[in-house]
Image 1 (tube, rainbow over the protein chains, first blue to last red):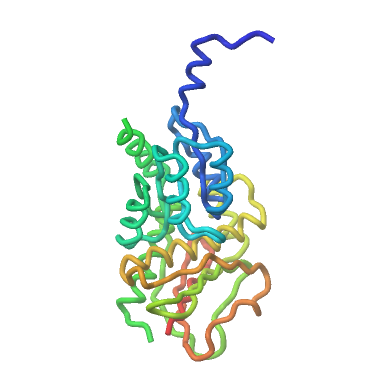
Image 2 (cartoon, helix red, strand yellow):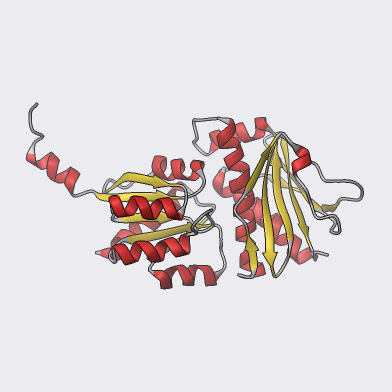
Length: 136
Length: 149
């Protein structure tokens, strides 16, 4: 088996790892399908906060999209746990809970951005791009 | 009993959902009070229990043909029963969650409970009357039912 060209390997390695956490399968699939950012590569999905934390411990992602209302462990608690494991993780909360206090609470726990459901493909891309810009 | 302003929150939430998620507006009718018996239940129903400042239930109920088209409009290729059940839960969750913009954080919503084809499992509180918000979208009819103390 021949080795991949150095340039190609660098490109693969420079991609940021994304984990998608949402209890809705269609939302997880939508985010994965509509992801238009070359720098991001989906490495894992999780259907609740507990699974997200377990997955994150084994394979820490660089970027996470996080729902809030989920069974077993909600997104707010999960954000806190992920940040404790990896303080520089970038977390975009994607939730239907549209009151300001929920967004503020998520940001206080360590999230970096908030996108309200329902969202268009363009809004998703813009929110993720803004998240990545903020980290630079 | 709900006020007109409170009901308009759910009407606007429903309108916004179809405009954004399906990229195609729905015709959302005026809410009406169920006079007798229980409100309509279709093939798939996503229910959200409400606690805190208000108590009760919000549910979205729709037919298989409507959910099939809605999934397709959202770009979903797996038109399975599981995804239809998931979708009604997500619609109910999104509209209820968006209502917190007006109701505030003490309007606490549960994770969705989904019922497929068993209307007897969709229960509204006995002592509270339900409002039905009729939704017409691409020749399909669905309902958002709001039943809050």
